[in-house]
Image 1 (tube, one colour):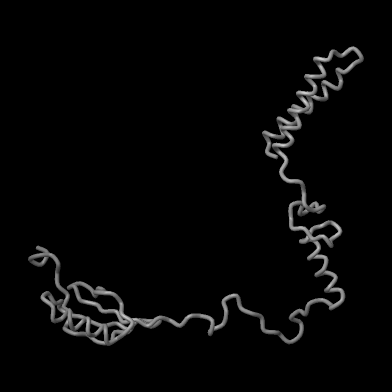
Image 2: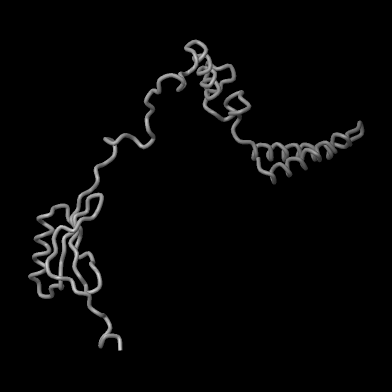
Length: 189
């Protein structure tokens, strides 16, 4: 029940209390009809604000899952009690006081991780720096054929290179000689 609903319900119940204080032997029937209407209004407010009845008798988890065998019908609390009883019979869980037992890592083992990807990156020299041309290839021969086709094309670059990417970068082969060119005409005059 939210704050506004609680406020309205409180007002309705206080009004009913005032009706109860005002009752006497000579109360007219019209007053009883007014009390009945106020009672209905208070019950409607109560029905609006109250959600489903608690499924368990547990104060901590009233709407939690039900376990018919538990004394308070709360599955969560009963699971905790069962674990405590099991620890009484089996003894406490072993701690790392003796020889350390291997504990599973939250990151997994080396075999669980995927292998690093191996790619060949075709790059061209644009006069200032090396830039990627085309998409990275998974096959070295395919990347070399792609660069050979670019070199034979109508507008070849000054130089091409093939870079091997496998956990690090390694330049495998360079075609042509990269020369740094000034992008400003007349040498920046």
